[in-house]
Length: 494
Image 1 (cartoon, helix red, strand yellow):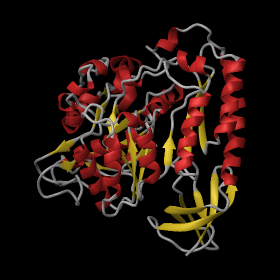
Image 2 (spheres, helix red, strand yellow):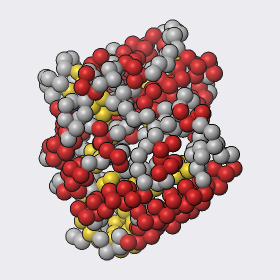
Image 3 (tube, helix red, strand yellow):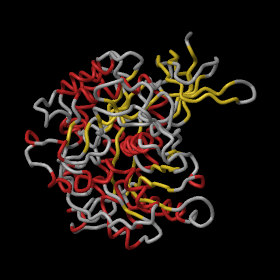
């Protein structure tokens, strides 16, 4: 969860303060920074602490049941501030708000408004209206896939509101960033978290029909950002002190298919890596069935691009994958990993798996475990299956009871923890470059931590430097000397 901090862009409305609380994934972080950019440019004052805000905007997550509960709990906690201090309104935005809209508003009257993605371009006007006492009609959910043509070639993102894709071409740069150009297209974004890494939205939505996933229904059909917009935002981020850009989307392997070139990412990566100030480009969320050899090669061999593969396997048993409406089996997945490691032996590979899917047998589970042993992944996220409203899997037979799902999650999690530790130990002796992300006074010297190329933000472990004094943003060559679970200890080589 992140909260925001920014100064007002103008004197108008300088006494109107807003706190943004962000839950969920890096895509939501980008969306919050777009909201922050729009609010700051319109004269609102953003504050860190919800207790200091006239209104609290909670950017919710609607991915799985635990994330939904966290979002509701956060909205309730923010609502408790009303009447106890400055806070006058609490507003829900984000995936949970978009997905459930008026139903969320009815079940959570503590929230003063539930806004959808279509409200984002006019977020400042919406907040002013709410603070003035107006009660907006709750957002009415719809299947956002139907807002765009079925054929990717016919899609025009300008016809719909796509969070994180915002670009304006005229007006003041105040509140948008001091590195925005004096004229021409500029990024509608305000950095909130700081640090040398920033997510950068590559695309939004998804055209796949995985039977367990509701995301396409509320995030919409797949829409690529134009390369010129991605590059312009990356240059702006570099001017803000960012050294690593983390390309995020629901399915990065589809990038460019709606722009007439499915290999566009291979072309874009070297251009991003060549931007002054950007030392690392990292790609997230690759669909194994769509990960073509040219993309594998581009990620592995392009200077400045991290050899890092975030591959969404979800399972390894072919029968389970078919019920998930996905493709693959242990042999094809291991062949893909073999191509990756032939080009980049030290490549980082992470994945997520779902355990306890309807119809999953003991044999299916064993197939998954055997695959994980052979795959030697750096990190694997393990999720227990839960029904998601409106998905095909919700109606499947062969459901496992909750206790059995928990037991299977524990079994796979225990295996993954062991395998993750073993994979980290295999890296002892490797040469790495560590991007320093935190420096803390440990009493007997600085504790310096960051990430090596194979470690993605927040979820893949960290690397601690054993000696030396460094600043956040430094890129330090080092050799791995120890492992502690997924975390590494490295000794600087200069």
